[in-house]
Length: 169
Image (cartoon, rainbow, N blue to C red; front, side):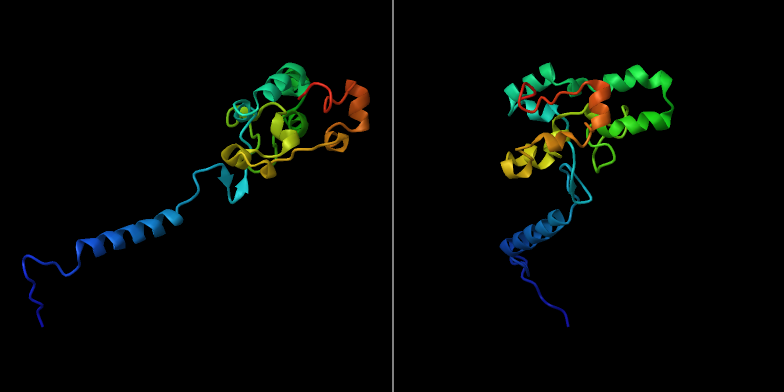
């Protein structure tokens, strides 16, 4: 059976066709991979420079007073005395997010994470940078948070003094 079509009329109205097209587009967009700062659903590190625009005073103090803002220099000074495996042992405390999703990998791949930046203490900042929601970042820290890297042996060896309440912010 052949359906006769009036040349002036279509089987599907233009409005219906538009609605079907929009619905298909919405389905496609909903299933696209995220283009944000996520890897496999995990929030990742964005680097301290991402903090500067919203937190200019804190960023300036961090860059000026916190030795960890240039912590990779310590690794560079020791490189000629260390094996590649020994150098990698320095990365967890002297870079941002080493060994974590979206964290420091190498100078070539993630140069923006080469120092121990804001996210070492405050946690991965991609979601916070995107939304400015204070609940998406670690805000109040104590000395215990510093002791992840600054264990007693390192405190003695490097004369560590926490700047948590005295200059880093």
